Length: 319
Image (tube, rainbow, N blue to C red):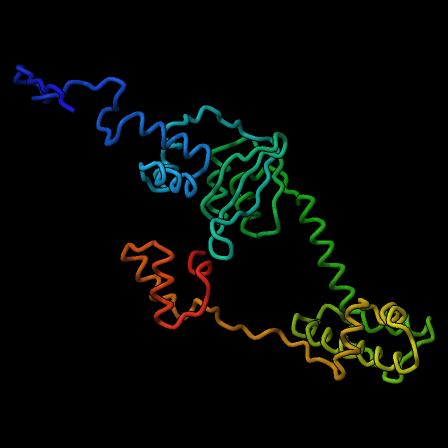
């Protein structure tokens, strides 16, 4: 394509030369035509980043997924401005689950997301609240950092727990009480049904009288002992000719669990499963190196590590 270049005769002008404008063919300083930009924009809106990039490659106009996302961000103007909500919901959200979390702010009256914060620090939330005065009620989760941030940024706001966390608090409290008095409850149930096993488990009087001192370790050992006692009761009742349904109802276990216990014979240790590395772990360093070198062809990478002894499927490498 040929365009004309002009020279400015004004010595005081910084623009000594300038090119003839291209009109609607391409934007100033653009590296691609407007038609190609529109095509990428349509693919991004219809398919998203990764799928849109694959479709663009098939259309012989390759582009990266990140570039497609930038096309949407730059071409769609942000016209909607959220007003400061009266009732604000504060909770965490995952940038990457298990590794990096942020804070999500929701207008609970309009049911719309107001903003996303980069972390879960109380100072970050406090700064946002100071920039958006007028919030009257804040529904938050149980994180102490959020409580501190709300007290600093919006001291006049009322802090409440949302419905989900109220139910979660009730659930945790109920399980704590049940775990502390399980032995006593089972003994009372056995007395009522007149199905007392010859092997009885003594009640820890210290835990019953002072349940506040029982920690996570003590609860774990107590649950392990309870399962052992359940197994012994199931064996004793089965020897007396009781049905599996009756045994499960008496000891407080599932029918499938009782049936599995009776088939296994000796009581299981109920230990946690030992972690075993995945099939891709020995080849992770090599794959990372190849990705850094620019190789993103899953089929080629699969052939390479197959030569190194990999016995897995192509789909594992692709994922």
